[in-house]
Length: 637
Image (cartoon, rainbow, N blue to C red; front, side):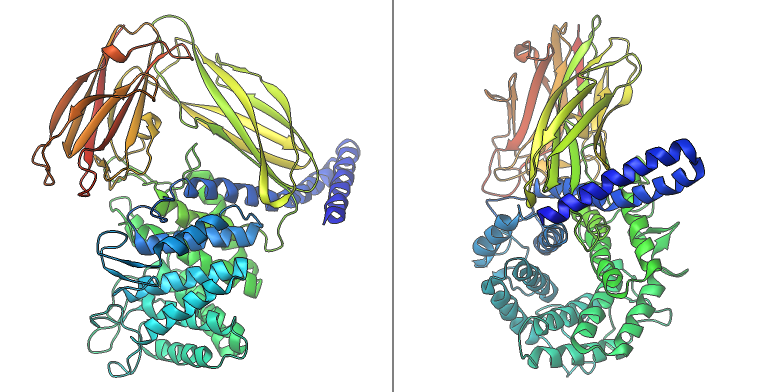
């Protein structure tokens, strides 16, 4: 592997030397050579982007409950996505979290602990599709580790699901729920994929292959695939297409189910059907708007619920499989457009990825960023990583990514930033870091060399560089970008900090306007505009960097439910400033509460007088924590 890396590095050096000569002698030939070099760097850049996004997703993982907060099936898909990431890139840092979930969550749980339904053990419940998602997740874990316990669990889950295959209604199909009320596309697409994956991993199997073939044949004749080649949500009690929404995940699962069964059988008719489904998805009546994969709820006047936030990522997971299997250039180009568009239009400075991949947003229906949307968009970035893992990659982030400056009446304000670089490969990378700041601002250092010494891909090496950005007192309110560019040979990566200059504090929770003030979201949640809450042992903390010449400050919260609000000048020693002592769960105590922050105004290390405000749950055992709708503050200088 080291020889391969050295050969690649030598080839790169020769390419750079060739480009230098051509630039002087033959400019047109040099331009073509440069485009070729750009293609050499696309794979490493794609891998670096996926790493940044995967790290953001895993920052939301709860190691105690061993899931992603408040969504059971979504957690399965997010963990499967992380498995995809590790398999595609060679990064193995998150194997421990997969095993943590397996060991902690395989038991029996009452309703409301991990799922709205009681969990029956072995990741099964009355929600048959939820059980199937976990089955696929553990097959992914088996592929990564070859530990038979994961494959055994997938078999256990599949045996449970098989009990809901029923030929007595509509001739076959798996019921969606334990009550046997509905047969739909997601449950049966999952069943075909799950059974085919089991066959392809169990030597000598015929049982699971037979079930997969039978399910595929039933699905093709069920009527759920309409005349346009699009998959509607399910069938009626009369066993006809119900005409309900064509969701991207149903289309993607139909594609993925066929691909896995094709691998098991090599039946060309299956691949023909898969191509028809794929062509319909990106055709004129399909799921694409202006080249972007778009859910119906992505419209600017609608909002996707927590389920639909993850649908497009499931589609892209199986679209990646389609590209890898067929090597079709058109399918590959579509995948690349999604990844490039997400990175360009649907990403904030903190590396968070939103639900609308076009980036469209408005005040009434803002583009939403949370761990579900992160997992979804991450699937497109993973698919853009070449199947043959790039030898080297270079990535970076700036922290804090969204700092806030409240300029003092006189004098400049200094912002401490930290550049965090990461790399994979087999040879040291001498990395040039250069920093660009807005006109009239200053950055120190403006340029610096950073040496990274990776040892393969399994555990990317990291390095840090402290920076300081100085903001003049006359800086205008609004968002300003500080950019750090990293160059090591042909490897290039850029990262940004989005600096908010604000003389006033006034924002709704659950919006992008809240994010710069949200110092520590912990495991809090937001279900839309004017909604952030923390229950149980979760909390969320705002940081208000008041200017050095501040003499008094107040913050006003619109708040309800079972809140505990604490203030601090150092994020360590906390004083309770609001406390709901009654167990109120209906919002009847919603009101406007003003808190005097003057006692907490003390000079911080950066010259400001920061005050931290933490909201948590005054009754952590009943599941109803404090909820904040709106935040404003008054400052006296």
